[in-house]
Length: 66
Image (tube, rainbow, N blue to C red; front, side):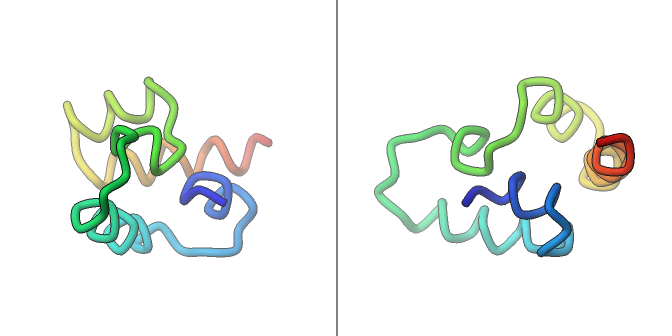
């Protein structure tokens, strides 16, 4: 399961994204980081253009609305 799938299911905390990112950095995985994490394009844009905290708030809101 991707980070996003697990986060949305409530089985991991947001801070796990950093472990996933580190694993991707040291892997031979050909997917982009966004694909590896399972993030949507909108989530990636928030993360890149704003901050970790903005992405966390956005994803928490998405999870609550689901």
